[in-house]
Length: 240
Length: 240
Image 1 (cartoon, each protein chain N blue to C red):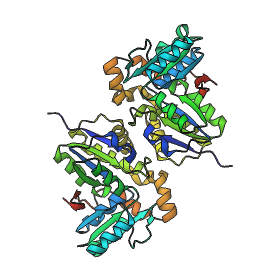
Image 2 (image 1 turned 180 degrees about the horizontal axis):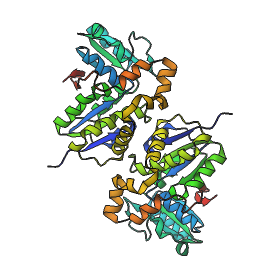
Image 3 (image 1 turned 180 degrees about the vertical axis):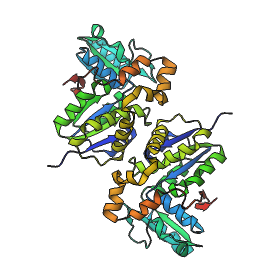
Image 4 (image 1 turned 90 degrees about the horizontal axis):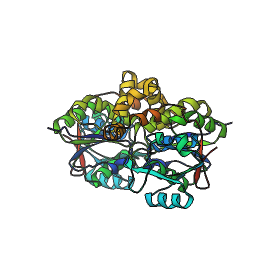
């Protein structure tokens, strides 16, 4: 039997190049949307509703008594009380509640994947690396690893996560995709000390030099600290 | 004084993210358009006219008694007598003649860069690596390294060339660009034996397994064997 195919899309602006029908699409926004989604669900959030805009986040959360949260350009968005830090969503705070989340890149990409007919959409980051890999192997479907990047630009942290997934699941897939070869090579060359690699990233300057979020970054690149699988169903991300 | 900025665009579908005004844009299509352009000019072609379509290549070349050449999907395009192999353009054949070239990715990207207002457009590949680097350093302008990829998909060979350029010129530029960091890292990790890296590339399967072009590939990834700088001027690429 032929193995299913795996591709990596390095930017939302490249997603149209890949066939999402009958595919599992993994939304990857390591700093920080998909790390925050894993954290909130791991800590007992009922679900996460990803939305495109701040007004919509406020409108939906007020109707359902949820937590409206998110960021624009890495900062707390105006009109929201909670941000996009995975460390904000402790069990004490979020258990039993619904998080309505809007972010610059990750939630937008998730809606793009849905609009393009993705069969199954899950979200992934280092905190839920194993859950994502186990699911991809068990599904036996084609996979597109979809990196959110930053305003359509390529970024390394999302690529490194794609590489981490590929390095664990590659025996189960056919991979003829230079993006995937590159992602795996970058991960293999840096996996022993991802944290030392991080200060070179453009996103590091944005998050740490401007906002001081070093603890966020450490959480976002540490494997399996919030190891649940968020799956999109009925307009919500829920734990599978 | 601030150093000029250097960015790497990993696909024509990402070129719109970069400001090309007052910038030098390096068109990169290692397999094989920009290797062929370097080869033809190095061997004495009067100029190379890059055109978008096969009919236009035939029309222009018949008017000026030029050589109409090119490929579609890696093969000699119908109606053309000459292809996109750098090894076809020996001094005996091409000296004193004009090459009218159309290719799947490289010539299209060149026209995109012009349409987006690039100040200066040059073409680069391993055969003219040093000439490209010397020019970028001497110009002291912002630089965009524009990878042609394959039908808008990322490819590794163009990225490796971008990395080779960055590794030589980086002290002269400000680089806050994850694409450039990745390209340099991929090059540094593979520069000792690029040929051994090549069989993993998706393009390798296209060129070698289907068309047997291993000598072409070796030429395209060998530095400085056709070390001229092709600059676009008055609708032609000429040696600067």
